Length: 192
Image 1: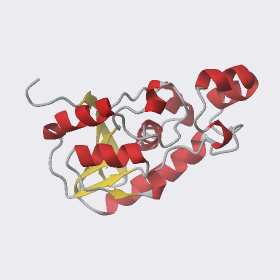
Image 2: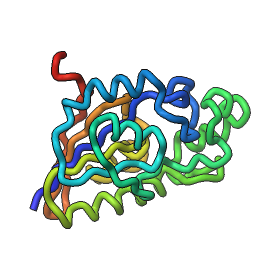
Image 3: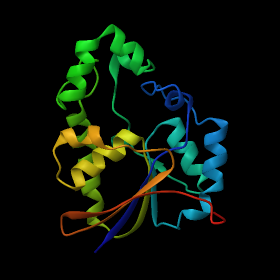
């Protein structure tokens, strides 16, 4: 049995625009409009899931999906850095940011390490292979990075080298305990 999984990043929010560690800010008006405009590019699926954040749920709804929010797909817990800009955190805690950016086991913010995120997301991803059919997941960019690293059995450090833009689809097909990746595409309205 083959699972065809499409991971979709959410539309824009205030945290994304301000380059802040996410604080569950809602999708902004432009993010909603863009997601609604590209809904026709999202094929029907047998199952739909999303990160439990407000912007992922709203993006999924704008894309015409009726997702189940899954705790294992939550974005990385950023502890005391939550809601703060990367620039402000780097200015106040330069060695901590350097450690976080170089060591996937580091969690100087008091939250979750990138390795812990990958293990959590990877565990959920592996459960999908028990079924078949088309699955859509609207997930935070760090969750998509973690899923990609896990699926390709790449080192955890690779997650820091992956850029996930708003409303990008990353496609996987999985069976027999392995995943294949079709590199992402930006969702576009059918008229473009």
